[in-house]
Amino acid sequence: MLDISCLEENVHGIRSVFLVKGKKVVDVRGESEIKLDFLLGCISHLCDFLRTKKKDIKKISITADNQFFVFFQGPYILSVLASSDINAPLLRLVSQRFLTYMEAPPPIKDKEEVESQEEIPFFLRVAMSDYYKRYPESRESDE
Image (cartoon, rainbow, N blue to C red):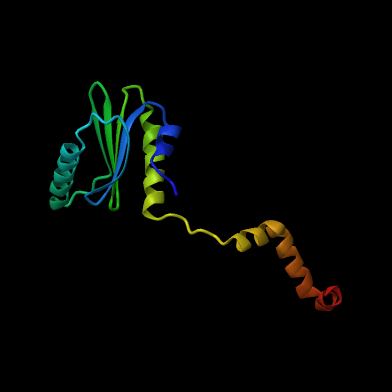
């Protein structure tokens, strides 16, 4: 399973990250000097206010000595405290990918299914099926 450490690995300059689902903290990484409860309360009040005004919110960015980003997707809220020299477009891209994965993770394939697809490339499977459709008698002799 993917966790928020992938953000720190892919984007340099992140000081602290936390992931919230609903009003419950799922994961926290980085500096512990942040007053998390106060910050979560402020973010949730802001989100509730904007939702009452029927506004759709995707991202909040606050810049001072450091930069603070809040990304929203479905029930998840991802907050990132970063240094002032962070690559913000890269952070936005990685964060949105991460939240998309968290909201709907890709299905896990069975090992047998993966192995059978890796044994014969797709173009060969198609070519073989076309061959056996044209010459069904050769399939019987192969078996």
